[in-house]
Length: 255
Image (cartoon, rainbow, N blue to C red; front, top):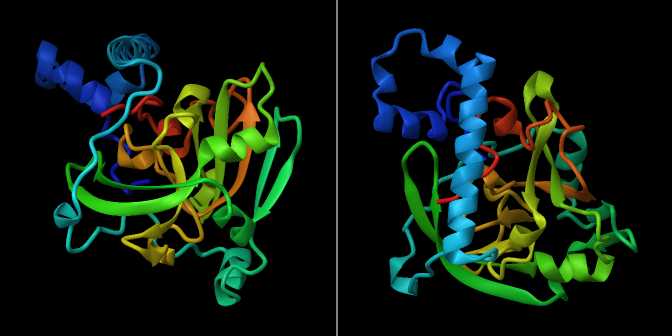
């Protein structure tokens, strides 16, 4: 997640540098025109297809040494959700928190934090790249998302995993994100409950946050409350697949 300005968009900047679009005036109006958005969407699909063709459906991000860990990993996006029910959970140490898993699954789940910690886990030292231009390296430990999905049983028609979070985003509802099924089964995709060998703090998304290491920071959903498997994300929010995507960002945010 990130608090970047809504008018910024990686896809637009990429096309701008390639084709001289920065010389145009009225960029905000251009971004809102249907034909231009179709160009952006086509470029995004091409980018996704090219990367998947080169690296396969489950590419992995570079992992680093302990000595590379940033002294201070920045707090990005929301750092303390002003949500009454969430604040109650914070006060009792998330003893009453449960991760709900539903939608297109064979067996809907409710997992406590303790239960999540019992699932197959992974530790990785990776770099977080924010669309704002900064990067930090941290050590993450968490349950493999694939392990959670395997317990629930993914129905054949499921294509995306939706993440619904506790942080309110004004008139637009709470934060939400989505990734596809191949991304969910990427070996580095985890539901992190620790950062740098410490319990994940509120500022970094407690009790769990998504780590999807081949994608930019706004895909790393924090304060996850519910996961839902769906065949399409069109019915959620403005139909673009995530909070920032609804504001104009790319759904596929591959690094």
